[in-house]
Length: 267
Image (cartoon, rainbow, N blue to C red):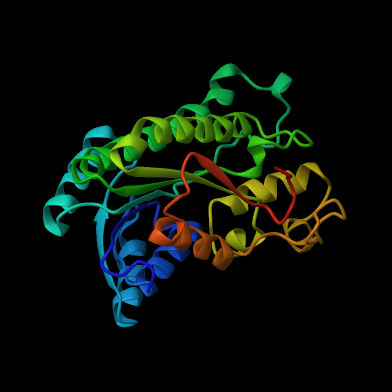
């Protein structure tokens, strides 16, 4: 198992991406610490993982709260002897998505920009302090193809994703000499997340209405011919990529953004 005896903290583990990554990490042998704001959902996931032979613990943590994140990271490191992997998969419904910039106030535009950079900065630096002390660790961040696409209104979300990618590269440069790797995952939009009850369903639904479609029509629509694989990435594929990147098999990978878009954007 590629993550045997590793300790992984997953923020936003109650969500579709975070939950799938947690299952995959546990299956690969990691002890997973599930953090998020919905404790009931986290506990259900932990029971599933533990019943399958994995090791999972939960904690109610607001990943936008600096003190709460630091205290949680300290607690995990104290209990487990350190933190090997930190993955931030939080997401939230930002209602400006799909609205042209000229129709937005700056305050609405800045909501995702402030929130996503804040949470990634807080969780990454909290984990990094423990990782650098041991001389090893992996920090995984999460972006999306909105960082590169300009074909549709994404409000401040695309700018936020680009900022998270830039933050990840800077962290990698600063933490690399202490043995810590930083990699950002950039998946394309996944209808599968909406079908699993993610906050993204609201985003997809509002966009569909503006395009004169039902949410189901939009979720079921085939990928455009400009996407080489003619489909969206699958949750399982994103989770498997995260597990690989967190493992020693990817030991030479840092300071990079991993393209998981099925070719929607080209690097």
